[in-house]
Image (cartoon, rainbow over all chains, first blue to last red):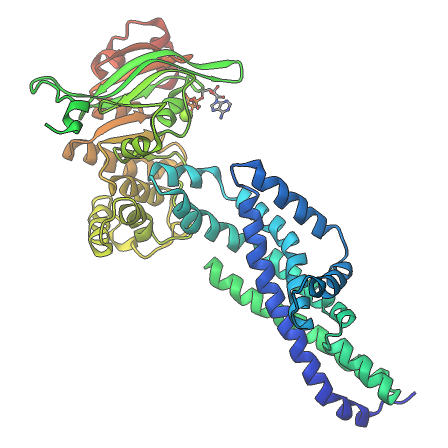
Length: 216
Length: 260
Ligand SMILES: Nc1ncnc2c1ncn2[C@@H]1O[C@H](COP(=O)(O)OP(=O)(O)OP(=O)(O)O)[C@@H](O)[C@H]1O
Ligand SMILES: [Mg+2]
């Protein structure tokens, strides 16, 4: 078996398309998981259990069922209910939702790590509850959890090939399609393998820069 | 005559108005009675120091007044208004009259020194930002940290952080300042700077001070009244000359000989 640069060149245009989809899924999936995860965390602190119980049950369920099942479910069941989205939109939402059930645990740990004295100082200064959250607690909690969130971004990247199952052509989907058409497997798979490593490296650099900005 | 004046009858002009009153206050943690039917009051403008052995309930009293914890029995009134139970709105109004400085400073590490001081005046009192900043700078000047406005708490020494915390509490213009062992977390060489600032405030303002301290020299200097605590009760109280000079109670003598 010899390495064929011609195959690499032929694959590249497809690769760029796939890369774009992977990055899009990763970026939007991350944002959704960051935002939804925070929403779950805050809802889990609601004073009434009529909020805490349903949120706890749903997130527990989502966390403990496979992402692939959720992708299929959303992709095939939602349209039956008259809700149609593009495959990519569905996929991004599913990934974001799935990972939000992990980020919520990260946020919770971050919030609990803020010393009680911070709450007490805020109360002593009479800060309203909402302001205590937004100006005192969350900024401290979030800067603590950026590294942990970053780990989930990397893991999310490695889950993006599952989108292939619902017809989204991200990098692996493109490589598979190309392979089937040209009977060349080594080159496209190697290219995307390297790409996954590079993207995760770049993502970690980005997150570290973000962390530095926040930690100042 | 407004409803307000009915609710807060003006005290007779000659008497010193009573700002804080605790009546029969009891606080338990689990089965352990920490404050045991406590009665005492503090007149406006007075500096009252609480002394006593560890675990005698001194911090708990300050935390009750700051509404960081609730009593199991008894009543607490501040400036004539009752806390516990009280509607949230009234509690917020009462809290505006009280400032607290903590043993471990509790500055907000995510804000600059200046914003630590302006945050509450802007969001709670509705002060315009520039006015709040001007006032914050005056206070920083008062505590000797005029050049630290832009620093982060983590860049300051413990003593400097505590002086910022004092400025932060004063920025709310409270009538009462609660001080809980504000120098006991500091390196010895930083204690004097903080105490000097507090002496200065005690001398130059009309603020009422309720102060828990193990610095007996400081207590003697600033106090109008010293309360000696033990096991959740006031063992003895009086002017500092009496408590430190000729205490009546054996318990007080023991305690003082142990700390002095
Ligand atoms: N949140 C709490 N839960 C349980 N017990 C508590 C709590 N807070 C205080 N206590 C107990 O109440 C008692 C009085 O505590 P407090 O902190 O008021 O004492 P103190 O006089 O300030 O002592 P120190 O000089 O050591 O600061 C102690 O026995 C303490 O263990
Ligand atoms: Mg104490």
